[in-house]
Length: 397
Ligand code: FAD
Ligand code: SF4
Image (cartoon, rainbow, N blue to C red; front, side, top):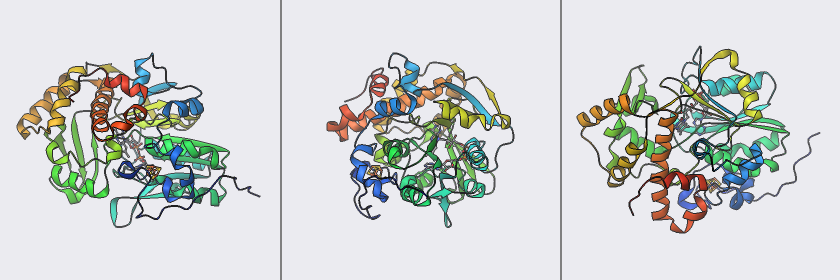
């Protein structure tokens, strides 16, 4: 017999109601459930508590005397990895989907929270509680849109599941960790991805329309380590656009306000993080944060090849120059953008230094955004590690 957890409940909001975090809501899904009762403490945009949650989950918060931990959080190890046989149609080589399938088929968990797409729109997210490998596979590839993954939390309790894997991005995982003890689970594993610059479905359309040569046929895209956006189209063809050629002036408002005020790019509270930005081009980047993360990674050791992480170059001047350029919405002509892309790819930051470049660029931009739009939130909302990262640069007023 399953004993129902004795947590408090409140009435979930209906989809059109204003969320407690107002414009900053990232639609993480918590408020679509009765766990909205905990929203004031749990919402990543109402109550930033990364250090406290790190101490709960990883037994310590990040060491502020170690600049690597400012950037990458608490970790036991990091590496570059790729599947020896990549999973067709996955975002990268499919390490995330493969780990999830192994965990389910070996009985480590009874279900997996992941996000599929709706039948008529490949980019419209549909969070699910997957119970079969097929349902996990159907969730492969990024839905580059805000996704209410936590909207399935009530279903978890009703299902009586006790061992669960949740796949998600930082804001979803912060809220999940804050209500974890209320979920009545015996074991929770969290497989995170880094996340940045997410958009609403309408915002995604604007990005595709202003950036791709054929917006309606894009099946997949990624901002890659070679300083280009890579689009893959339905017919298998690919298209690249240099970062420096993006129409910054038109795209400035496209990113969700939640993502413009997020300082958890690297998913600090996941057990295992799988991204790409700290790895050489074509490889994925793995951060093992704790023993549960190592347990998950061990399941796929015979399906991946790995190499140590490397770091090359110095990001500081490129970041400093990009701050006023972004602020003023400067867009280079395409020939200059391409040239700059080629030069920076040759001499620019690589490996972990590329990851630091991306974190610095986004944290400085986001710090300015919060300072200008939510000055009253700045002090409490920006974690100490992010303040130290931003303090390395001179910012405009
Ligand atoms: P797959 O096996 O294809 O599985 C992808 C998984 O992602 C699925 O399980 C699915 O449930 C989940 N997912 C898809 N969309 C969402 C969503 N909107 N919210 C929550 N979960 C979702 N990595 C970096 O290193 N740097 C970045 O800047 C970066 N930005 C990202 C931005 C977004 C919006 C997302 C969703 C991911 C981002 N990543 C980033 C992670 C990276 O793109 C890959 O998702 C990751 O490396 C896993 O690849 P894979 O082939 O193993 O995943
Ligand atoms: Fe609710 Fe999540 Fe939005 Fe915060 S981000 S208001 S918890 S749905």
